[in-house]
Length: 49
Length: 215
Image (tube, rainbow over all chains, first blue to last red; front, side, top):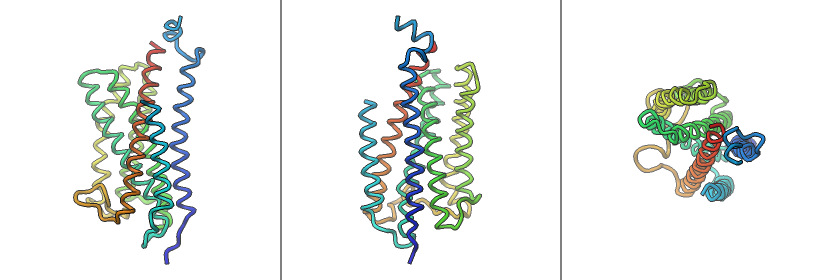
């Protein structure tokens, strides 16, 4: 009878969720940064005038 | 379009998790730990796909000097690094109960580690060179050279004696696994591929916006 090792399964799914969720969050923060006028570059500020 | 991909990937991932953890049967030899396969194998598939896209986009950039191709290469490399990281981590977690070790320097694991390091290097090259045109050119060359490691990774299990098992699905001929396990795996393949498309589309849009903002 093989041991089931559910802890390892949970750890693998958790690591994947953290990595993929972390990257999704990074994209959201980048998007938010680009929408904020203070963080946008001079080109964008010129264009918005 | 991007938000549709986002919602689709969320739904497909939820279906993949349910199928992988609850619907697919317990594997006879390995037990439930085999369920890590539903994360590990689709991750490496997306890593191959991502770096294949970097390869094609890099050639296109060097040939046509199209900024769009460079943005696709940059975005795909970034996403590929994330999925390669998931592949390595989930593989190590799977390796401990089945092989008795988190890591061993066998051909498959080492070639994947080299792949990971090369694309981290690719992203560092982009970040370190101030002139964007020169950075894009150097990165494109590195993106082409690094892609040569992909066949090495995939065929390493045939060319060398390794602890890692040969492919069960990404190989010539029919897959050698029961239908329900194969079905759950295919749903996860689709889910991870849609997630890749979502991430790359989103990142390309952000890179374009960043470039327009700093122009």
